[in-house]
Length: 69
Image (cartoon, rainbow, N blue to C red; front, top):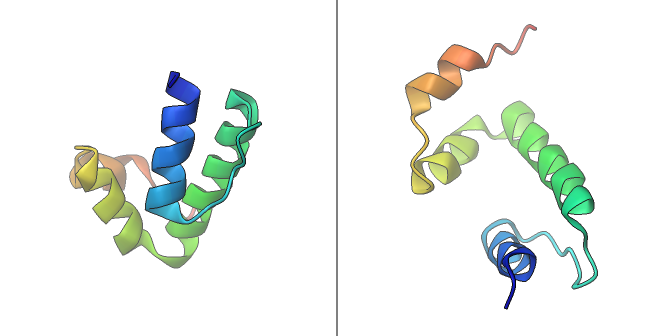
């Protein structure tokens, strides 16, 4: 299994988004960016939880994100 298929499988499992097996890296990036933006606007806590699971520091996120940019 190549990296893109592994990423697709993992994202589908973790987010519930269905990408399809013909998804490209570019389409993955667009869909994932939309999903993350939705979390920023509607469920920041879930975003922090997901980022914690992949070991990204919450303070760094809050320091770099301002909802009034």
